[in-house]
Amino acid sequence: MIYKIVKYPDPVLEQKCDPVGEEEFGKSELKQFVSDMFATMYAAKGVGLAAPQVGMKKRITVIDPSAGEDPAQRLVLINPEIVAKEGKLIEEEGCLSIPGFREPVTRAQRTTVKAQDEHGQWFEATGEDLLSRAIQHENDHLDGVLFISRLSPLKRDMIRRKIRKLQKAGEWD
Ligand code: NI
Image (cartoon, rainbow, N blue to C red):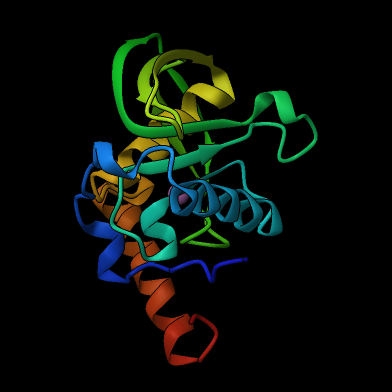
């Protein structure tokens, strides 16, 4: 199924998510949820999606820098922990929960993450550039941190004001 993506300022986006428990791994519910998250992300033409963006307060994210072009680039990160960051890169960034807004955000150029897969197996993955950015952005979601929190207060307030206007006009649901 394809979920409706939750939009800012829904409070679920700014809460710390709960870890996936050992008893949940290997179950069909978790596999189905991960598969639905990929379907939802591809339908929205995104390269990353975190569980709170579909209203689930769980530490699960899916990433695919190829946006569905290359199955080998699919990454499922459950209970992720960033273990190393290197370098800096400033690039425009957006979020499926804040559609229509893109701003430059400083991120580490290279990120190593430790996470569990759908079977509960721990693994490590290292990403550079777009993948590095996606890992950091999605990991932030699990702590209730949105990319607009990483902008200057001035920029953030400007975006908030524009969203309020869109809400009043009924163009933001
Ligand atoms: Ni996002």
